[in-house]
Length: 528
Ligand code: PLP
Image (cartoon, rainbow, N blue to C red; front, side, top):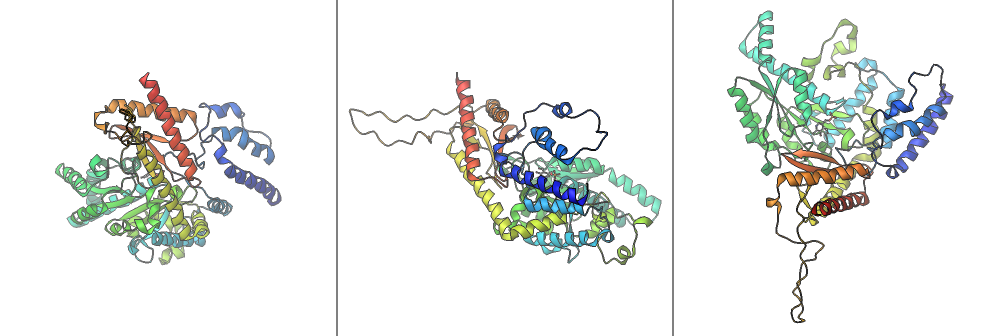
């Protein structure tokens, strides 16, 4: 392709992308194909001769679209959003145009310097304690995913813990130090809670350490408490293990629970060698709004914090923003500098080489899209975006609560997520009292919203699970909306997330109507 033909091809591609976004809600959110569909549509062998762009472009609609789950559709209310916006897409385009594995400052100074600046902006927007900013000992770095961020800080935590232990023991002989480090490593245990994302367990596997999860309870809305953490720490120590790391979560995956940061910060005082990482992959975005910023103040007691701007902050995948209070913790663990990576700027200590803050060497220019997004929306626009979704979530949860003859809400709705179950035994509606001898009947509750004794205690869990599953599967098979189901403390539940960039009130109302109609259909069928 020449620059001229690139321009023509790009213009028609951008036109198609704009049309795709304009009409996205008319497409079924889920594909209707079977596994292996694409193999049947594409040639078995690569083309031996060049093809024209118009031929290639045509195949997007005919071959690729049938196999796409439309995450940007407002009817996508599953998992968590993966927001895409036009400034985010433009950032990706420029990043592709300037492609470089910019591992050292020298590789493209703007890549590093813009990253430092936009992450300081973000830290300020989220009201993180100033110690997380690059001006002091801390700083931020863009990672590919929250999982990658967790592995990275867990390795830093492991190395910091072992170094401190060995130093305290006063061992000086190099071989003895190595032996002792290996011995200690076999006793290390990373912690999470039962509701931490599975990435913490995976990180422990990758880092070669043990993993334990602290129990959580329904009465605490499945949040990790200080007492729960302390109990798990003590149990590990009783067994001769060394707990060195814990993930605490702002917005757990299943229910968007917020762990009890204030209590956990108290526990941290008794465990100064414990690295505490805040996984705020999704809900951390809400910290841009003042009404949530009281949460950030507790992070001063923790070592690291990560939020995915690619989930709820309008930035295209991938943009996972990791902040640490002591950047030396990362570089001490991850910096290895062979001669071919050395240069006078790095040696001067005046520049940042982000390769020492992450697992890979090379890195993309991801700061550009963050810069474009923050400038296009402004902080006020980002706050409005989050508040819009929180309001939609509250409206949706209110609709569900009003149908307490059909649904139960499992935990208090949070961060635009509602988690519900279907009641297996539909409560009988109260019929209006009959007139006696022609007298006016006393007023009665509107039968549309019946107020009835709560039968939840009588419902058998298995039956409730079976009905909720049936409702979920029927909705899923019809593909008009896409929700997620999960099993939470033995309860089969349906999760509805109203945080898609294109979501409007009408989409949430339609999702609610679908839930009601499907639940009634299933219950009618079961009553037969
Ligand atoms: N942490 C939490 C709380 C999540 O909800 C998720 C994904 O939904 C992750 C981590 C993993 O995110 P990533 O795909 O960026 O690794």
